[in-house]
Length: 170
Image 1 (cartoon, rainbow, N blue to C red):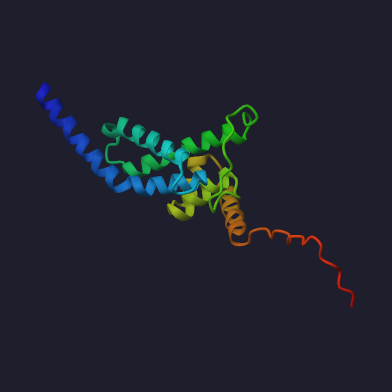
Image 2: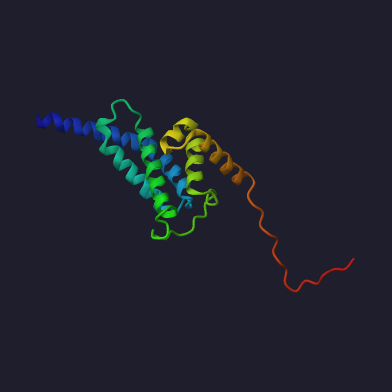
């Protein structure tokens, strides 16, 4: 019986390694978009990925035909959502301070980033995103639309003031 278990464990490990080889890059990119960190300096995204993959490995034998990528993505999104709630929500004042994000999605709220990444980058249906986040699908649609508009039409910055310039009279 011990040999049989070793063979099963080795098979599970090979399957999981193949899954990671194919999915880790895309999941890391999604995590980096969520955290709005630079692509080459993304410790929070790497931590999200590591925890998501560890959770997926721990439940590998219980997937029973379920898509492991979908499971890993759900865990990644859920963990990001909980971390964002603690950072920006009720515990925000007591939470750890984070360096300001500067990625292309940094001007969006964490919830907007999560919805935008799931909908547009990952291609998850609006109804699935709503179910995952426990929101009405109309709210998900409104947040996605607002996030998209913010990215496509960023607020204009005021023109810099030139010191020492003289006013020109007509």
